[in-house]
Length: 102
Image 1: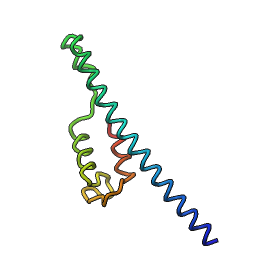
Image 2: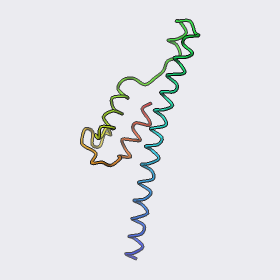
Image 3: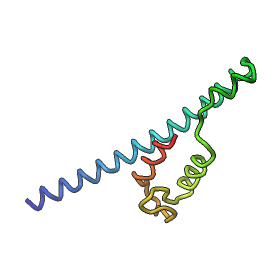
Image 4: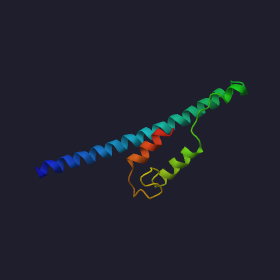
């Protein structure tokens, strides 16, 4: 029974790592999508009159970029450990927060 519990604990750790990887990939793809939309809006803004340019913009602000930068520099941005160093590990809570603040 102890061996089975150990195996389940290892499986749980593997699942946790997979979730962290998926959240990180989701965040990376979301940022790439955001930047591509900005470029696309820049291309289309040349074709639109000035009055229509401002109406379609609903982009995240500078705060999101600052939080993403802090996370990339190795600090937690989640409400559980905000500002503390991440110790070279990804945090599922931080990645989830970043993916929901776009």
